[in-house]
Image (cartoon, rainbow, N blue to C red):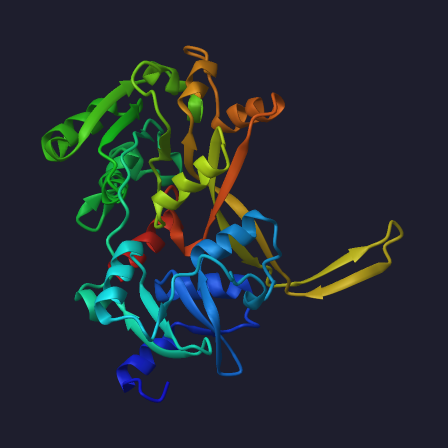
Length: 361
C-alpha cells in the first residue's frame, strides 16, 4: 500500500482494526467514528471487511460480544474491487451498494488501494436506501420524567436544537423514504395537533388518532386497524434511533417475524468490587468493578398488520403484553440490535441533555 497518498493512508488507518479486537469494541468504534464499515488486518496484512450488519447478525446468532472480529468475517457476499477493474466500474459498484469505501485487491488478495465515498462522489455519506412504509408514533404520554416542564409543554414538542422531538423522529424516518405518519395523541392532544398543523403539516402526510383515556403502548392501535394494511413501524415519541431503518425492515422480512423489537446494547460499569457468597456467608467469587452488557428495548418496533386484529377496542395493552401473546401462540418475535450510541432516550433529563450534545456535535 506504499502507493497510497498520505491523506488516504490516514483515512485507512482511521477505519482499520486488528482481527483480535472484540465485536463489542468494533461496534463501539463504529459508534464513536460514525462509520458502518471497518477494514480488518492481521499483523499488517489485510484480512477482510467488517460491517455493522456483520456484527448485528453475529449478535442475533447469540455470538458472544467478546468474540474476535476475525471470527465473524464473511468470505462470501463481500463487496470488493479488483485492480483489473476500471475507475468507472468501481464507481458504479460503490453507487449500487452505497458503500462508504471500496477496497481494491490484487490477485494475491492483498489490499493495494481504497476508494472513499467522499473522494468519488464529493459528498460525505452514501444516500440512504428508500423505503415507504407507514409509521405510527405514540405521542400520547404525559412525560412524567420530564416534569415540571412537561406540565406546560407536551413531551413531543420539547426542543432538540431548532426542531422538536417529534420533528426529529419524523425527519429520520423521512430520510429513508417513509411518508405516511399516524400519530397517537392523548395528553395535550390539541396543543400538539395545533403546533404540527401550523408548523409542519405541509411537509408530511399526518393522520391523528386519539385515545379517550390512556391505553398503554399498544392499546390505541385498534384505532388504525382500517388504515394500515401493510408492515409498519412504531416509535415511541421520546427516543431517537440513528440506524439504517431499511436494514431493520429487511431483517424483519427475512425472519418472517410478526413483530421485531429494535434493541440497543447497553454497557454498565459497576464502580465497586462485587462478591458472591455461600449461604454461610463465605466468599466464593470476587470481581473488581465488573462491566455488564445487556440489550435494552429502545421503543421502536416493526409489526405485521394482522396483529391489529388481536388488539381489543378500548382495552389497555402494553406492547410487551402483545409480544407475550404472540409468543404463547408460537408466533415469531425478533430482536434487531443497534449500538449503544445509536439510541437516545429523551424521556429523562440526563438522556435529554446527552442527546442535545450528540446532535450539536
